[in-house]
Length: 458
Image 1 (spheres, rainbow, N blue to C red):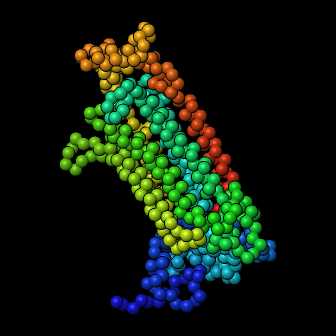
Image 2 (image 1 turned 45 degrees about the vertical axis):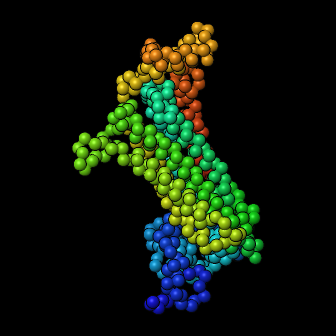
């Protein structure tokens, strides 16, 4: 076994002594790569943090100027997490110290890397979750447009993967739109947990400074702060799991939609048509047109669920307080968020390109699939439901063919709210608009706060 070399890497916890390089590499792991997306949020969080410090106003202004310079440097890619840094926090603090002297030595007063990283993550999640919700609403809106465009296109509906009753392209699209809307609207509950400032909790037991937690939360545009300083660390893993569970629900919605498109566009069905730009080919079979993007959406949905399972495994069963295990929450969180963004962007752009085969769908609506219509036709003549049901079932066994219905007749017979003849397009549009208003309102609140902190540097 070779002897471990010593490292000069900069850490915020080091005493100045040389560090064991093997130990440092093991503890840093992939934090340098993972933390890159947090640089701006770490600087913005620090701008909010200094608002709560009991320091002279001149010192606060000096810190703010230095942090705004750091923000510009990060935007210009002049402030990076290097090999000599342990993580994003050390990269920012040592940049400040190098370029602004003692100002950089003050920025960490009153906090720990524990509440600092939670702040970074919550700032990042506020932005990312609202963006994901907006993309989900875009996809839902495209489905509503698809429904309006193909309102009278009929095809079979299925239960147990067997033909059940007449359905329509509009009914199908609106079902998936409403599924996305249910998930998009449920973000509000998750967002309330993200929208609380953890600063001032330090390592989980507060700080021996008269730190203005309420003022810091207000400065960063949070709606409040975690009341118990110890609850911040106890919530690690739980919040990430809540976020990824929300993403997994979006994945569930998109995977189900994708499975339908794959099935209904197969040659044996043909209700949905994939345009050439949405299909791939085969390296050996020249006739193939494969729905790869929808298959890979299903796979990505599974990856999001895998990220959720990873986060839950890391956080499960730990006692109260901070543990280094939490370091491994970031990578699966980011991976799950990235996969969700990819799915939403791809499906949102694919939906308006899908086509339908009106004739083929209508041709499939004959024979047994109209048996229930025949039952209710007899009910209108005064026959009790169960009597009509049994009579129709017996006739089906004898091979009796019931009269075919035209698409117009099928639609006209289904006028109850939300059915084939009365699809809820207006209601879906109204829900999309309401969710967008909420999204814009909450984003405007915290973006305004961060713009004030950044002083035009953001």
